Amino acid sequence: MIISCEFNIDTACVELKYDDGTMIAIDTIAVENEIADNMYERSELDWLIYNALLEYADLILNGDLEKYLKAVMVYRMFES
Image (cartoon, rainbow, N blue to C red; front, side, top):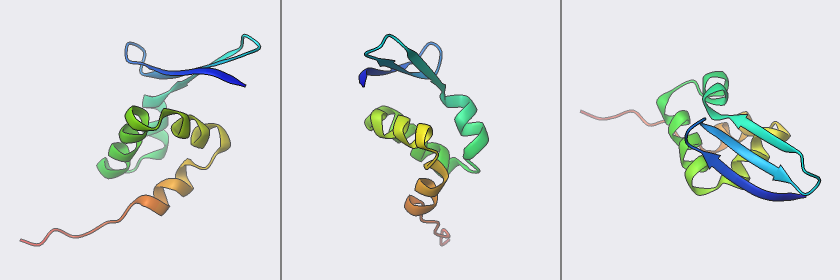
């Protein structure tokens, strides 16, 4: 069971601590470089980090991040 989930701004990692003493650090920059293809997806990932950290960690650990981004991203052309 997770006892804490925090974003460490110094390392740019999401740090998960479990009740058995184990810890997982998710490198958010590596995730963005691997998954996000554009600034909109990067922006969505940043929003998750600052507003829904447990959901972000769950998406990373369960491998559903790409599916999530495809579901929430809406691309619209700007009209001039």
